[in-house]
Length: 136
Image 1 (cartoon, rainbow, N blue to C red):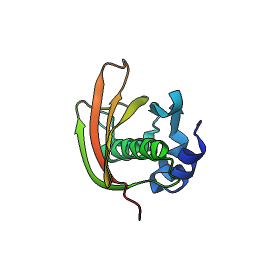
Image 2 (tube, rainbow, N blue to C red):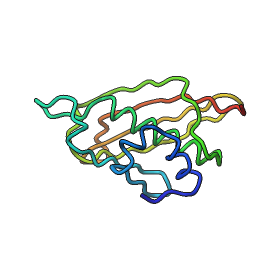
Image 3 (tube, rainbow, N blue to C red):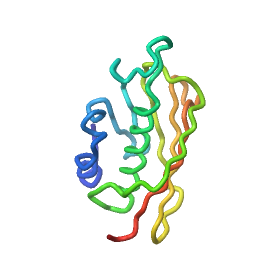
Image 4 (cartoon, one colour):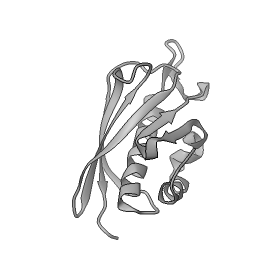
């Protein structure tokens, strides 16, 4: 995983990174995040499909670190709310996500993220996260 110093510091403050860290790769200066899932992340063994909680954790981690990197912070901003839309069943294949900081205000920042499998135009999950960014 290639992370700048701020992103690497943020990764160590996240509980999600302990579980998912070895499965995550970052490219294009944080513009593209890849989750290479293992069978332990399967939520529905019949399909088999990735567990929605694991996918949400990955998307939140990527969004939070992208925001922290932009703000040059060494800790993850506190999550206020999340809106996750699962558009298709996610197979046990690489999941590539593209976080985009939409707005940073005095207190709240908004990050949109889309994830795809297979072809980049095939979006399987989209989310919006709001983070508290005011100084503490």
